[in-house]
Length: 335
Image (cartoon, rainbow, N blue to C red; front, side, top):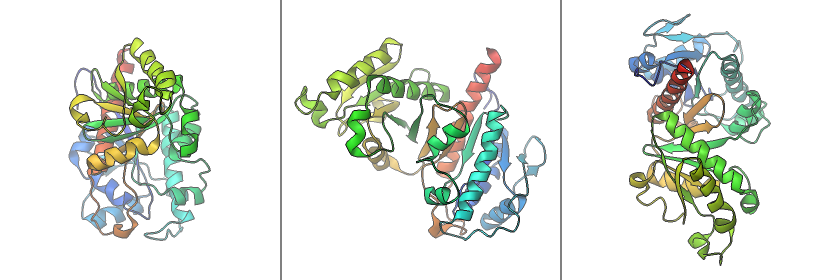
């Protein structure tokens, strides 16, 4: 993972929701020597939590109290105490524990100690019971990082990245929230993140909002008045983006034509990429000053503690975090 454009980055890893499969997925990541070679990983957990997760899947995790080649650095604050977290279910206790670990990671990011934060799956209901008042994790992270710039959830499967102009809002509000600047911002954010991941000149396609691409204004003028001008602004800045294209056809053969696609609303992209291949999916909290990545699947309470959860998405999330953080760190060193 070392070349002229990247350095070995510092990554914080949390266990996600402790009642789900997150701890055992983190244990699998930490038991892989290649991961410990590719990044300086700081695991934010109590030793007892990590030992229990390792026992579930039958692995040994090389841990150290300080950075050392071939080891993960355990930052154990012994904060769990006697709190009992109900297994395989939503709970306030699980949400509080997950948020505590995430706040530790954010504190490291705010202090400039890490280049990326990776967390295994969370449960939104537990997070809200545990004290998160924002609608989703992206807004929570932005608040904790004191960041008010452009953000977007980036959804990734192998060979395809997607961003969206609007996100977690009602369908009735989508058209009013799409602006020329918002389209340009989403294109630029996706382009920059792909570039930082190692794609030299990303190729981006942009979805229409209305059926049949608006049919020259018959089914709506958003493509003409808002979206296309936003694309043109991005292209004028040097980005390789084109559109608009109907959302029911743009994803057909898209991996051969594009590195990423910008959609106008949540389900427009989510349905498509999940049909293209849900296994291995990753979510990146795009636009934030630190790379934050997580597997796209949920906590899988039904198989938690059984050692059955696939590590593929978690591994992909870590790989993306390492790639982006490594290149950003190299750029900072050479600046």
